[in-house]
Image 1 (cartoon, rainbow, N blue to C red):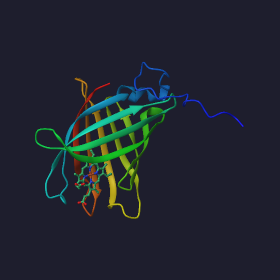
Image 2: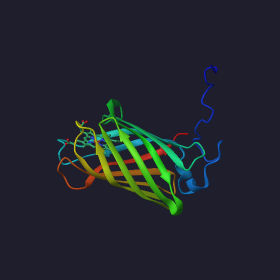
Image 3: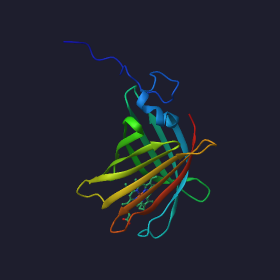
Image 4: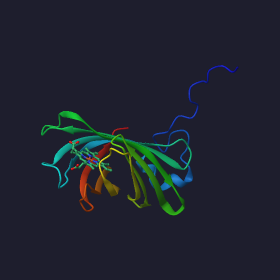
Length: 180
Ligand code: HEM
C-alpha cells in the first residue's frame, strides 16, 4: 500500500512569467493570465430592472494548451456595497492553432455553455454551438461573449444571450482591472 499522495505537484500559473511557462498555443491569451476585478451592469427584457454588479475573474494554466477560467459576481448597490452573491462560473478555454478557442463554461444554475471562437489581437469572441441545461435550469438557447483588452489595461466583457423566449441580446457588460 502506498503512502497518501503529496500535495498536488502541478499548481497553476497565473502569469506568463510564472512557472510553468505557458504552452505556445496560449500565446494569443497569455495577457489574460491572472486575476481581474471590476464592476458591470446587467439587464434583460424579462427583468423588472437592470442591476449593477462586481466581479472577480481569473485565468490560469498548468503548462498545457488550455486556460482554467473562473468568475464570481455579486450584486452591488449604488455605492458599490455588496448586496448578495450572483453568478458563478468555471470552465476551460482550449486553444487551437490559428487562435481558435473552444470553451466549456458551467454555471451552478444548471447551464453549460459550449462555445467556439477566436482570439485575434486584443479581442476574444466566443459563440455557443450548444447550451446544455439541467432539467430545472432556465431556458438559454445561445450566448455570445466578447472580451477585449484595451491599450490602458482594462479587460472589457460583454455577454449577450437568447434566453427565456427572447432573441439574442445584451445581458452583461463589465470593465475589469488586473489585481494580480
Ligand atoms: C456576471 C454574471 C451575471 C450576473 C451578475 C447575472 C445577474 C442576473 C440577475 C440579477 C438576474 C435576475 C434574476 C436574479 O435576480 O437572479 C439574472 C437573470 C438571468 N440570467 Fe444572469 N447574470 C450573470 C450571468 C449569466 C449568464 C452567464 C447566463 C447564461 C449563460 C445568465 C442567464 C440568466 C437567465 C436565463 C436569467 C433569467 C431571466 C428570466 O428568467 O427572466 N446570466 N441574471
